[in-house]
Image 1 (cartoon, rainbow, N blue to C red):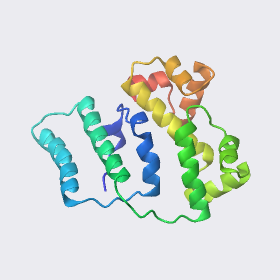
Image 2: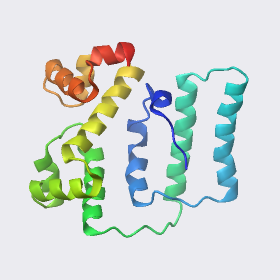
Image 3: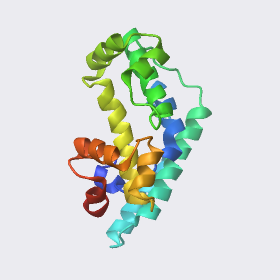
Length: 195
């Protein structure tokens, strides 16, 4: 299992380039690797560890490049591997499909009704099912994706806050600022400067 803390990933915009893989990995989050593939991925992490031991502080571009290489490698392996997908119960299937739809549409749509309509169920049924399976609301899941993308753009691009707001389909910078602050506790400008 591979994990990265938020501080390491802060400011690295892996978001848009890895969306296709995230959706596929929902179906099969565990992919068996041949020993030579495992060794290849381990080499990337060994390189980062060696650099740290030598006193070199890997910059964000290096980390971003290495993580993208790993994620694209995992995605390629996933596409070329006949992996038995796990069976989901009805509620889990709804949540899985919801997440796939959110990944596809979050920059344009944030309403529960929109996603319920795509899933051919009522907003109430969607909300109840998602809460039962995940302990979160549909709005929380959508917001997590929107905020994660906004944070990545604020830290890793030179886009103005207004450009970021429009890219995420907010009607204006003020609405975006309030939305962002509700979930992060700071304004987009504060996040860009201090986050």
